[in-house]
Length: 460
Image (cartoon, rainbow, N blue to C red; front, side, top):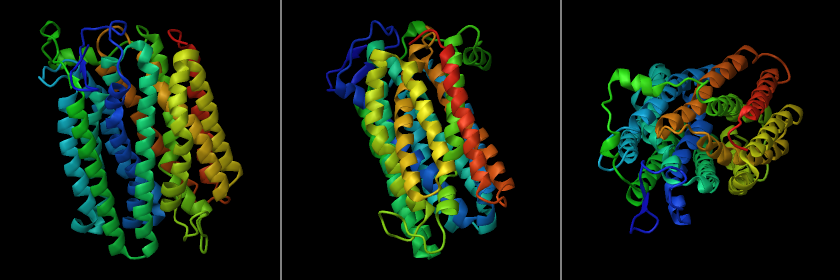
């Protein structure tokens, strides 16, 4: 790896090992990670607020949980396939720009087109066709966005020496969380105003506005990243001819050959099962359990909506605690070990579910958000570093980080379907038993995901 004469720019060279890579400047580490701010702004706004809100207001509100599962599950499964597949392909592409950035450019261009189409879909399509339309557009969103971000998941392994990976992962977590809080706040404010207006035309305009904002953020940050982070093309000595047979052989691996990364991937799958089983339904939980006629939002003193409480209060509470935790946890994991931070984060996130079960009011929900921020911030920053520590020495970071990304995506499909069916079946039960059952199931996922990390032997 070489440092370019452009400040902060990095040239990735796949020929150097983690021990041989030169240390990066702080500016260089930041540049590697800024893309994740835009990417998480995109998904936080859509998944936490926009998509659940559109399903509840443009489709039958009585079936919102199962409709949300239908809209999201197909696209999320596509993302599960695209991430490791495109990551594997990117390891061996011969673009002059490098292995990762061309995918970012192509995927982002397609992503912008789909975002704009999604924005106007309630105006262009009849209500009877919206369920299918939303599902198709979400599928295209997942395909295009993951085409851009899957290869970029390998960038720390490409560029950063092992001694700096905890710090780099900390900045990854920081950018993830900044994007998360900005996406949730803006989406909550914009759509919350549309909901409280009681006017469907105003709400439709709010939907268009938030999609345009998301598209603009993507354009700005992707352009900056492509300009500031440089890559070297794949060396000719590493050229291979990619055909279906070769690709499949490169794509799969035997868990027994690489047990450490296999345990890490399983742990990630279980922890994210816990997160996503609840995450999609938070807006509905707040509306159904904490809301009601005449209820006003604490602190804001406005008519209560799940969109506004989730986007403008709960998610910011999460991020205000997660921001410092992500940096401190990344630094601490370099000195004290990754696994201890995973144990702590799992325990904190399980505690959140217990609070939701025992104390069903707005103040308790904000307290739960703060505890979740501590756990989620630590897990976000350490998980990537833990994975890169146990990557097999095969120079296939794109493949393995693509699988790592997929292990965070597949739970969205499974967790969402289980949660949607559970809430639909139990919706008539008293005392919000459906949500209580969902939180108990989440505690089980988080506990199991934390325990399996004990099996990892190749890192502390």
